[in-house]
Image 1 (spheres, rainbow over the protein chains, first blue to last red):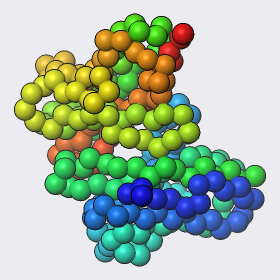
Image 2 (cartoon, each protein chain N blue to C red; image 1 turned 180 degrees about the vertical axis):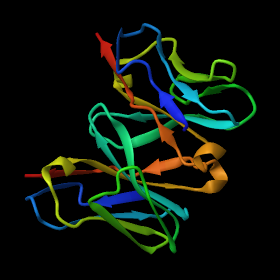
Image 3 (spheres, one colour; image 1 turned 120 degrees about the vertical axis):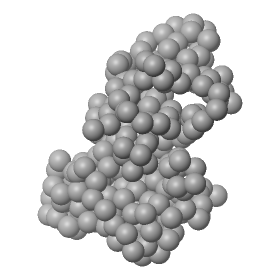
Image 4 (cartoon, each protein chain N blue to C red; image 1 turned 60 degrees about the vertical axis):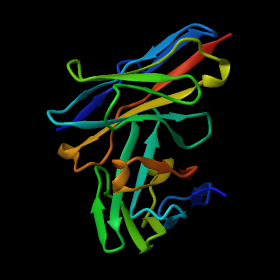
Length: 113
Length: 114
């Protein structure tokens, strides 16, 4: 079984809709991250959480919100989706004891029409 | 601010030829360095990492990278590539400057020509 899972894997939605992407991990890591990937831009950090009570904005947090429901669960929400949020979204986890080595989920491909 | 530069967005190479993917970083303190690989339609996987000790690190599938502190580089090499190495490769660095969060390069697509 995969250590980091993401649901859904693919989603097509319309402008203005609320969307939630979910991430679960069985690695026991405290740190979790949400990234988006656009062609040619690499990975951009949206939000990160170092433990259940800690939430921090990344470099591109506008238009997104997150919820850390438990150590193992970290959800990303788009309150009102817009077309330029069409991208590949990745969740990752890390353990500070491993110099922040990050482990990634398989990704969610989101298309906003 | 800390940054990572991958100088080539694409590297085409013939099968069985050697390849080098370049990565340079900016940091004034001790760093941890990583290479991740993303195969088509998949997530990112850790390929290799440098935390301390020997400056030459190797992966299980024949890649190696050398930490060069004086040149602030962590180039990835493989002496003979295979078609299955077709992927995008990302370099990343963390340090006290970034509160030990990963700073990512833009990625290099390795294109293997038969």
